[in-house]
Image 1: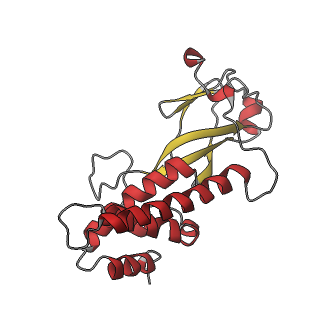
Image 2: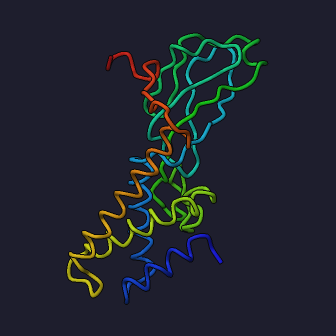
Length: 209
């Protein structure tokens, strides 16, 4: 059984006649929204250093960077680093000693890239297999959130046999409630009485300060 089969089966029962293609479209839209708004997908991206090179392209296969959290290195001063347009610009060029000390770790919020199937011209290809859109562990964590969001989007579609404005409003409230819980979880890391995270100023481009 694929990771998303339980979600698809639950949606089919609530929306008789809906096709898997339509469900997958609503699912991607819901995933994109919850990842961008609730920050549920966070990863530390490894960026190898090159001596004398201050600029590096951030590569997250199958995903897009939504928000940068922090950048760290064991020896190089990265406090003045700037992230913009999929590139990190370091304030100080790394020396050979910094390169030998290991890579830079760039922690960021990610969202799934738009699936393109097998388009050879796509620089960030995403397969059509739904299971690979997000990490495996997120399917279980986000099951209720995604189910509510998909049902809301499907039932809000006009002129469909499963459409229902009343039920769309109900699932919209459920989705917003679950998404708020996930947003809070992401901000405090499952801890209590903790201040929510603040955007680090060193990642904001200087021309916008």
